[in-house]
Amino acid sequence: RPAAGPPAGSPPAFKPHPIQGWTPDFIPKVLDDAPDQLNDELVPIPAASAIATAKALAAKEGLLTGISGGGTMWAALETAKTAPEGSVILAMLPDTGERYLSTPLFADIEADMNEEELEIATSTPSFQLVPGKEPVLAA
Image (cartoon, rainbow, N blue to C red; front, side, top):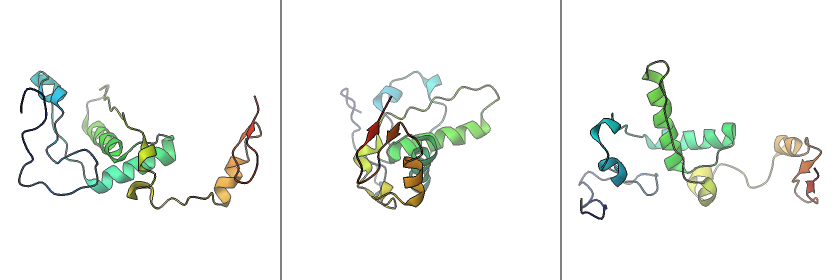
């Protein structure tokens, strides 16, 4: 790796995958330069798991992140399964999912609200964003 940080090249085993910005051998320079005790293990991220976790974060936790964020959280959840009791696991999701709304990550989500979503949208009297109506933004 040159002093500036970019990898010298990708391995011949490189294959396309859906995690934008990553290569299968991606190790950030900050980790590469870190003391050895900071790198316990490298966890391969299955593409389908990264996508499913990103979708679950959006649907269940309200965290809109990209596929790489889903992969990061998946690795943290997998790590937690075997971590000693009382362990602290940090997973940083520094990306927002807004840039991925028109990508395959969210392709199965309809643009318009369904009946259940409209019911939820109208259930809060002081804050409503309902298609075809003026927004309600009362304190």
